[in-house]
Image (cartoon, rainbow, N blue to C red; front, side, top):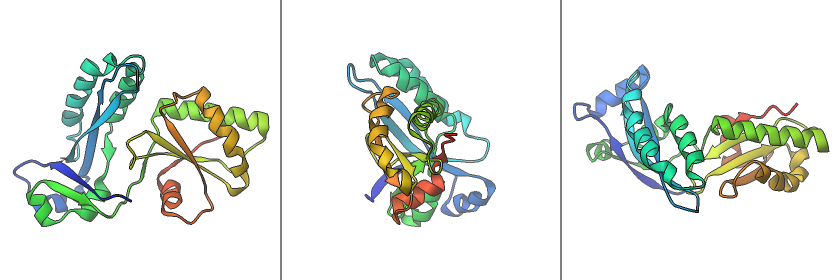
Length: 220
């Protein structure tokens, strides 16, 4: 896992002690995204600073980035409108990295309004709703044509990658299906989305986090 340094957006009146106390009151560290249009090829998704958000304050932060996306994101044809919809929808809840920040934030870094992520709590966030629906359709169709899965697969969007990467965890007995699935998913997704299939029996950090943070796909 790479070590990353991120800028923090924290109100001036907050102290290191106060943000630590707010952890138990529902405060979160969240970042948002905005679409950077690039004609012909897939648009970029640029992250904001990581915001310290107290309970109930979320709306006033994400609107800025949704406005930028709505004004400029759709210019990156032909993929821009698809990205705009996904980013705007996802920003309404934001990308929650609360545990990662709290586990790594030091007093010295707080004073500089930054955090160095060395220990990672979050590797996966939920796949956006529209992509998850398409992924479910794909896997259900595969199940109907080629036989049921031993157990329901698990999907999660991997956050430590510049390219959108969806991990799909399969039961060990279903790993022979992955070669057909790799071909079939691109009937539902553009080629710029990357898919990785992993064995849920593997004893790795990726698999452990996917089990904890991913979403089961009901294929029956």
